[in-house]
Amino acid sequence: MTNCLDEMNTALVGLQWGDEGKGKVIDYLCRNSDVIIRFQGGNNAGHTVITGGKKFIFHLIPSGILHKNKICAIGQGVVIDPEVLLDEINNLQKSGVSVTPLNLKISPYSHIIMPYHRIIDSLREQKRIEKIGTTKRGIGPCYKDKVSRCGIRVADFITPEKFALKLKDNLREKNPIFKEAYGQEEFKFKSIYTKYKKLAEKIKPFVCDLTEYFYQKQKKRFLFEGAQGTFLDIDAGTYPFVTSSSVTAANALLGSGLPYIRIGKNLGVAKAYTTRVGEGPFPTEINGKYLEFLQKEGGEFGATTGRPRRCGWLDLVLLRRAVKVNNINSLVITKLDVLGGLKKIKVCTAYKAKGKKLKTFPYYLDKICPEYKEFSGWGQDVSKIKKFAKLPKTAKIYLNFIEKYLKVPISFISVGKEREEIFRKEVTC
Image (cartoon, rainbow, N blue to C red; front, side):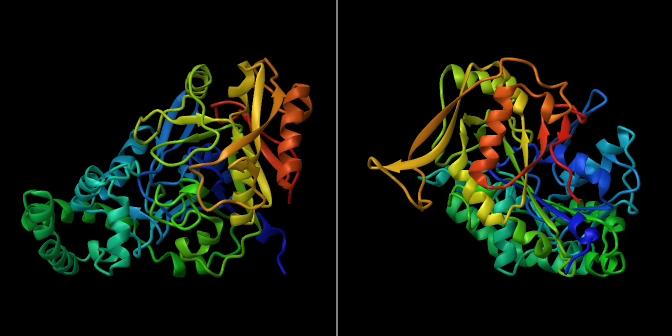
């Protein structure tokens, strides 16, 4: 049995292919949270928050760091590029944001992305017949080493003798592969060790046994931050066009290392339309003037890579599957404002294959034909609206249809880029 404090513990995940606006939502929700924990992924994520005319892009650190008196943590399910992390810390500090071992804590069981991970990520993509659209940040190869039991954990990284031993062991295995399979020069132990040892010294003060530390602080309110989106999940996603970790709500406790925390709410974030970066199937994808419109009005370019995002109509069949996979009990709809300039808006309500409507979610999405329901647009700027009742009638019809189809209430609606352009639709505990 949970109390209201337990119910305030929230796991927040994306319900599409990432880029749903989770960073902004985390920034909003953390006002009522004490601890914000990132539980998976790496610096292939890009969470954006715009406040006071400043734009902050987060790759590893939870965006809750912008708020005072919050504890932010990077859990054991995350893979960390130490250079990217330290750059992120330095940039935040230069912008006047306090980042210290008091408000940022890193699990010793997170794994470290090494330079050979990034190189092999790029080389493997070049050789593939079926490209997956990797960000080439070394995420997949790092997770592969973790599962292969040859990864370098943060605990190893900050212990010089352990780091030296594991780095030598890895180079002994990987150098022949780089040379024979890819024709690349071998990595030199000394140069890597010297450089990364200095990085380790800077990261060491932030390292904290999260399991023990938060065990003493269970009465705090926890917010678990996911990266990417449900259909990039290594198991539930459109494999092989996925990321290399489990992004679903069920992984929040495992990836954070806090199995004793009770989560009262699984909150799913979805755009009012759909986007995807990289390769892979996309049933509601559009081209031409509508694509150009959504990319321009929605700023649909990757926060991490800068790549233009593929765009399409809202796919409710996809969202219904994501709701089930994550056991979602509350929704956030973002970028409602982007659709303001359209006279007609389509929503996918069913899939067809070979002319027949599918009764179950398909194993593959590459030969799916979407069936659409058309809605009237609202034709006006909604970014200054603060209440659901003040939205145009057609916008309310659109949102109510989403709720009815998914059988899950919408709790929050985002109507703009700025921090304050989001409002609550209903009161929850």
